[in-house]
Image 1 (tube, rainbow, N blue to C red):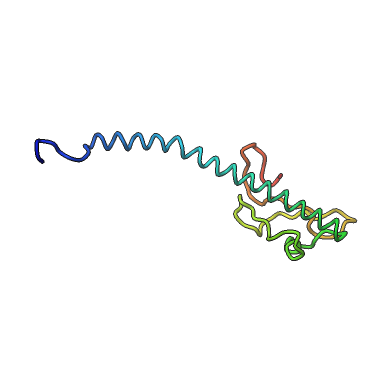
Image 2: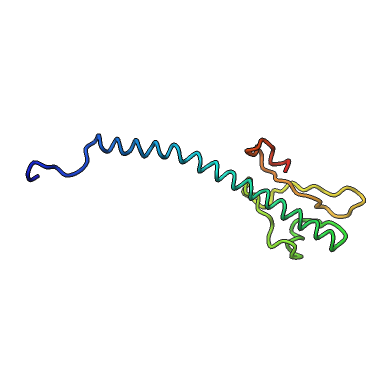
Length: 126
């Protein structure tokens, strides 16, 4: 310590900086997580639309609905099984069979995720 000057930060300076950082994080983190949730919901809507379109195309080509979702992949109507970003799985879709006289087992799909979206609707209703 030459000339009576000390190097470094005081405890008060560190506390002020940390409190400002905490304030900024408390504002940013909730917005981040709500943005992530909105992105998952949009991805789910897109997966449902793509899968339902593939089901319609399958029916138009084959004259019946597929027996499983895997059949859409096997016949190249989908690249891979659809991923449910809310449930975070691809094997838990709720499958709606067609009404008679239509043939097949997969008429439509819905998410099996529990809970409600930001707009108040249930994921299972999409």
